[in-house]
Image 1: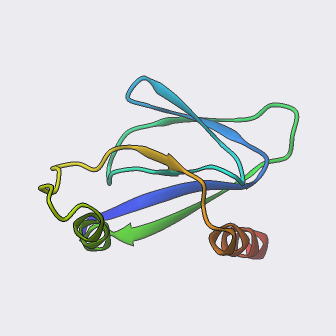
Image 2: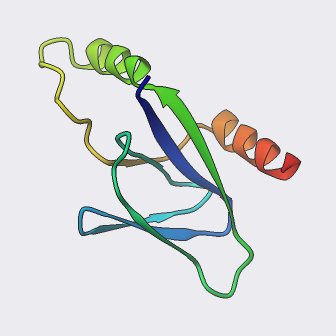
Length: 100
């Protein structure tokens, strides 16, 4: 089963470098990646940070793509996407990260 990750930073921050592009993550910005997509990650210096990763089935991403872009064909790979998570997702990632 292919799984894709959502990377987030409930506390602190990090820089993710994907395909030559830097993406800066914090509690206000999460990153959607394709499964097995290579990346480099560096935590922000001078601040305590913690990361959280949620894996989801690629079929879910396909379903979301189809509902949002009915007229477009599904791409072979989804674009690397930085987005602002809804507040309930931010709170869930903080809660789960604190249990570890």
